[in-house]
Length: 422
Image 1 (cartoon, rainbow, N blue to C red):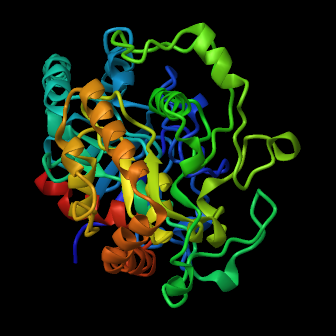
Image 2: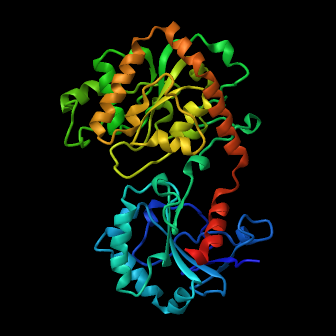
Image 3: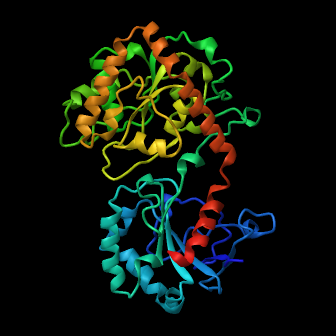
């Protein structure tokens, strides 16, 4: 029987239970290990962490010990010349023998965001600091939601936010959501009854990110919005910073013109409910039955070193829709690694391999232009030709929901199993 993973609390903080990071508490300078906020019951006979142990006030066990901190991004480490990391290394110098005997590691975790870094460069920078403390890079463990580095580094663990955010597909358990209705998912058994649709594309947008602003401006300028069931909920601030190559020449005047048509709404009522709603359980199946294809405007676009899957790609996967994704390069390639299929049979997906942001977006816009020239009968034929892929993706995401275990427990089991070999 292997060792038990033991969580080491530096500040006896088990009474304040909140497993996930609070961005206000990210890597506080006071060396408090914020992530040890479990309840004692979590480690009981019926608790999710029943196969783990914990010790208080910096006490270590003879097992695999883990001191656990939170961060918002790996970029946080660079602040003030690695000052926080240096303080942590100073503080933990009393455990030299445990580090040398591979009985203690320090974990830095992020369960909600993906860090936009070159991990190899990050590793080299961190090693420079660690060398001053006679520490090895493998004395540290990192958890992050950036898919790019999965299985590339022994001490990097990918937290699958994609799976974490899959909605409850058992419709009997679904309650009224924040938008005031009960979600219903498109059904593979009835999809043949909804092959005649009104719109070419469905596209959801809440917060005004650069790629979404460009898309709205482009569609408005090209007079293509009538081809879309399109939402854009929040006004665009004039303070928004565009990339150096603002290739659409968006100006304050043009932004003001866009704001005159915002909000564009599909299933929301921002005057009544505001912008703050949980998007993971907002599924009105009739919205999906009314559009042939889907434009997924992901969270990340300008970032250079990131693949970040969020609930946004769940929408077309569950919704039985072929999709075009506006995101970082190789997003589709990485999505396929998760077992999903894409739609190069009807769409030119070469945009996925274009590194340059402007060229990638122009390629996507050209593709949207092309699809918008199809009449609805052509859209129907194209849709039917890939309906088997839509059904496959729908079933695959349902199987992920059924088959994956409690992700946090699974993650720490994986860390424990690899602890000595990291």
